[in-house]
Image (spheres, rainbow, N blue to C red):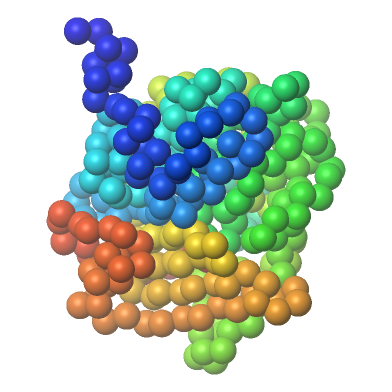
Amino acid sequence: MCSASRLKETMDIEAYFERIGYKNCGNKLDLETLTDILQCQIRAIPFENLNIHCGASMDIGLEDIFDQVVKRRRGGWCLQVNHLLYWALTTMGFETTMLGGYVYSTPANKYSSGMIHLLVQVSIKGRNYIVDAGFGRSYQMWEPLELISGKDQPQVPCIFRLTEETGTWYLDQIRREQYIPNQEFVNSDLLEKNEYRKIYSFTLEPRTIEDFESVNIYLQTSPASVFTNKSFCSLQTPEGVHCLVGSTLTYRRFSYKDNVDLVEFKALKEEEIEEVLKTIFGISLEEKLVPKHGDRFFTI
């Protein structure tokens, strides 16, 4: 049996719709549908790397992703959840292109040298949009971003801005102030300190999932990778975002008052983590998680 036929048998778009809670039967290939799909996915499928800290691998083949995310109701990182999103949008009939990004490092003050982020371009009636369900935390877009240079695009989490320079596009955000009622966490290394935040750069060169195979191995095996250094899980809600990093649980409520986000912290006991994963993130792990909060830079 050819691989395309096998994929068709094992991957069902209706099962994906059920997984993300998408109920719009019209499925018009318009911006409203694209926005609905993106928002349903980011509120149902966590951005997480827990496999690494359970002794398992982060696989990026479509069948593996579908089994993990749809059938076993887990989350994944960008190479997984955005690959799934790319497949779903393409299956629905959208005009899609897989793109590769270079993530900005605040401590290093530069973009990654390797292409470590997967994102998706969607074209609708002559207009191009960026959709990305795999950055998580408070950097996660809630709506598609129109591919226009220099235009502020306000969304619930923040103001996003795309800028193009000599063929390279840059995604930045303008953030709100943040209020942390738990005073012992006001200096937490998890807190983003910058109001203007660079997120990643990318070009419009079409990519395939094979372009990410080597970096997928590197990110989950190298001691230099933030993903081996920290266990994390984040999930968007209609008002904000839950994040679990190591054993620290946070909830950010966007714009709880004028131009201020509320960020609440809770230090969990190890025996509480399993229940939190089930009740807040909808995740039941098959293997034992070893939570990790290393010293690599990672903000929520």
